[in-house]
Image 1 (cartoon, rainbow, N blue to C red):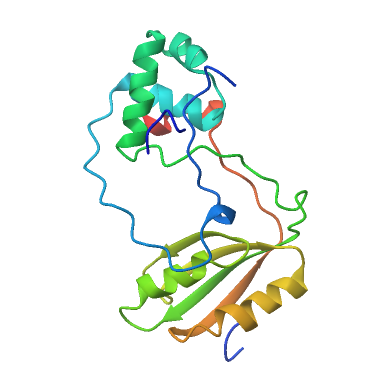
Image 2: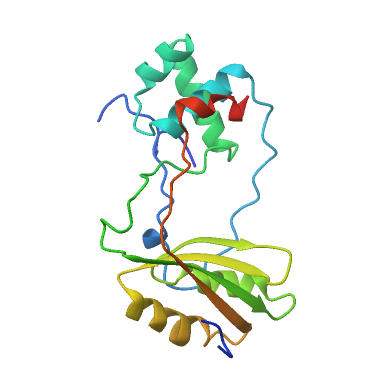
Length: 194
């Protein structure tokens, strides 16, 4: 993407380049496999500083980023563009307080799925309203899904009607989230990208 575009079953100008990652923007039908991304070039200290700045403030201007990492605006722009093209930066977005946004019920849902059905299941899970994270994992279950819904009734409907109706889903387990803390970039965690 160019920088200039920037329960269980059985139980402004000079802004940084933009890209979107919103699940709401995803098409309702099957999602095609993304084009293969070439291997990322090694990151130097300036690249890591740029990433740290943009993780803290995705709306930082090119000018602000350039000043903070002590490079020209053109250099900062080229570096951000390369980070986007290399797939290091997957998008720019907002950290949302889901409860204040009307999504008061959150849950992690674990799924056991039919062997070799990950791509098919992933496509169907991506189309679910409120799905914000999907991961293929190892262990006692195969998939971990994070969802946010308006209330428990909508969550129940999502699990019992939508997820459990996917033929490749063998079983689910729903783990309600009582409280969550966003561990986004903070000044006291600066060494994480070093």
